[in-house]
Image 1: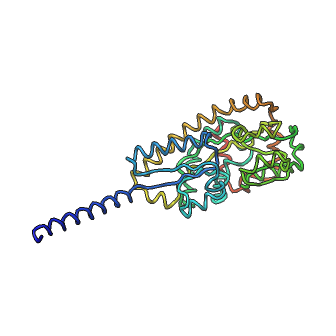
Image 2: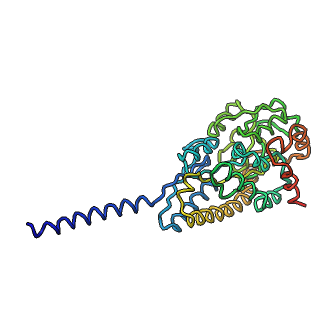
Image 3: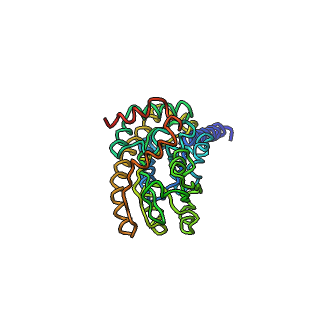
Length: 329
């Protein structure tokens, strides 16, 4: 018995050591949640899933990302706080919402700041946007690793709209962020803010008469069932930030940070191409569903907005609006 005891103790020691190693290895696997408000069929969810797979592969399984769609973790406006307290680690957050915490980002959501889609594409690749992203990161402590084209925001309604005057007293759904509210109030509409998941029902009950969103949202949320008209205002060529929370970013080793940032930037470019291609398809889809789609005289709307506010009053840095306009010259 005495001769067996040391071997027995050695076996117990090896088993314990193996358990410690296994626990340590398990502890090295980072589990992140990526929250967003979009449907599983949306291109944004597809991008998140694609990025999660690539990151898992390139980290040898050490970084696992669970993508949670459809507002199951909260509304977009909840995500900045959730990123800060580490209850969600990655999120899509609209630039207008991010601007609530870092006002210079409001430049990209000021109504009619962009002349057309090409103008927006130049902005996405510009040093100007890179500066603004860096400023946000320094101010918030979070890490916006990429900016994704969300789509041109258009207006749908239950009745025909064509001129700024047609918006007077219109019950118009807009998100809570200041830039969207400005679009409504400058046109003398009555802005209505409600949870995104409630929009369809509110339109159906005529509690809300009109709303503004990219056409992909009109399609994916089936708003064509409760709206008749589309006015192509293109008042905001909108973007989403892909943001990693401060605590989550700090958990990544520098090589992991570089890899994650590269994957998210690359998949964002894939998404941009898909969103741009989808916009023309969405317009045709909505026409085929019986919606009347009409162009807007954007200059009339721009003049009305300019009388009510300036980009600087919304939080843009002095000179940035001129730099933005110079991208198309």
